[in-house]
Image (spheres, rainbow, N blue to C red):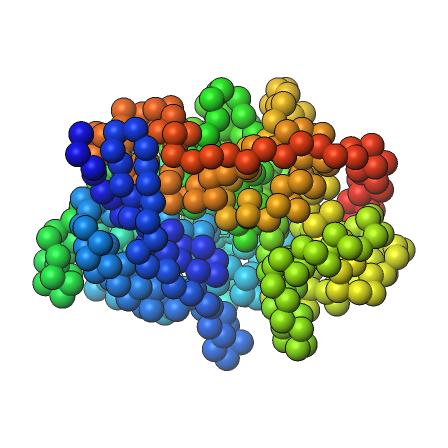
Length: 492
Ligand code: LFR
């Protein structure tokens, strides 16, 4: 086979890129043809995504990819839960709002009061998180009902970009599964739940499977970009689902951490697990490629490191990530721990200050140096991984002997090492480009060039060299794990 090329757009919470993937029948090679920032913009107290700019960057990516040799199809994956509202003419009614915006404050409680927390979990299988689409929409129902009245369609971010490219409106299954408005067993919207929340079910377009061809670039866009009409494929368009498609596991049962701004810790299952135990563990059931269930916990992850770095910078200290890693290594181990997923850490701002408050309130040593802050974050994330691993094992009744870590976060060697040590398991790290590889692999399957997901994972294994980490000093982690467990209990 000659080389085939597909174009994968991968949007993360702080940057995006266009990756040209070349497939020779055995390996998928990636080339970054365009990279851009994805900085949210605050206007009068609301945090928005700069969506038109992002669409402009997609156009640039298409031009660059054509210049770099051309391609057959386009696939887009993005972060979950966020959406745009379209009028009946198909124009955006306002810029999509960022999931970290404050409009969701109190909405989870309001929805749970109306529906019941247990019932909401039973219906959707989703972990309760304030950022979820359902709570964002409910804040509009409560505070800006006129906006919803003028809306004809809700499109999740990757579906919105696909619409801008093709004029077609669909909801791809994996991204729809992050809304907390979908029935994960039948993989369809739940109109009764929507109606109870005063959301018109007609706002939500039909759900399609990952890997569906949604259309081709509009004629107007082809003229503007001087390009052939390209096929647009709705890949596993939630970034987590794309990353999971690229986990290089050889066995059916595996456990993974998709590591970027967030850490998604989970496993792939044929069916959802929705019971009292999984609800108490606040584990979520999302949909992956091929209609599998991705049973996972959303952990705040490297956001804490990224935002802490920004805070250090705001106060005049410009550390690189490597500097922060060194500072952490040089600080005393296990001086204090936080629950990384405490709601106090979700919003942007002074994370170091909030960590100090957290430690004070929980009667721990209060970190004084920047290195102590960073060490506390790393150790707490690794502890949270271990905690989650136990919960997942408990819910699935399976044991996992190693952990696959994939995504950009695996460049963080300290985190990979601490994960191995905390969990007393081998960590297999890579590919760093998991999301783009999974996106490309699903396009190649849709184009008939790879037969199925298990073959795709084989090709992905051929395409990169994993890095292995082995546990060090696990006994010390175990001693401190009890402290962490108690901390989570006190906090609840
Ligand atoms: C990961 C992710 C998570 C989602 C969070 C916010 O990148 O997509 O799955 O909960 O971002 O959208």
